[in-house]
Image (cartoon, rainbow, N blue to C red; front, side, top):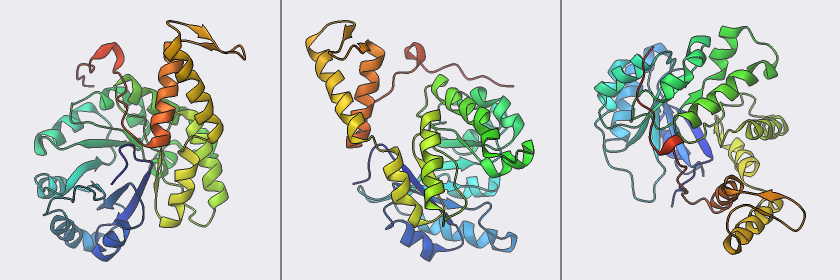
Length: 286
């Protein structure tokens, strides 16, 4: 059965249905069929038709969810009503108005706007809170790097942190990291995932199956983290309000909630994160 907290997301080209089938058996938590960058211009219509056929039947109850990164409105209209579609990824979103437009074309479909420009980052919160169909946001770092003229990877950290904060402020799940482009450099992938985890990302998109185990291990809690979380949760069962552990660590409700999230991630079960103020922010435009 597919884990309720996904950590690995595998991109596959939409014009290669054979590769899509292999991807669904790769161990990835989610498969993302790409109709945008991974498909040549003369193959776009074929990719849309192949993806429509793929999603024409409902996914099995224990199957891998399929998301689609669309390229045009025609893609949205062709795929929106298909029973096998789990989510649409929307590239190059810069304003909340664009999200509202796509939501009107695809009522009821979960949406993930991709922030891939300086303007998108500036409007990160309004995009994240734009519409109830928005279930997540994510970065497209290749395009963002080009737009900002950033050469050193750390130059993207402010944009990464802003994306994480915007997602949380809008009551969404933590965003997934953008892809790591060098499929041979698994050590580099590990280090990059570790850094992303410190920034608040949860899970990562991949472009090759060999990246999946590294991402999985990088974002799963360590045995030490699990042990510490268990200690906190156990202490909270016997004490009311704030408390101090034997080693002097101060524990309050926020720390206990974090410990529960760690244990949920270790077991890959659902723990709903409370929205700020208990409700979703009102939609806003730019």
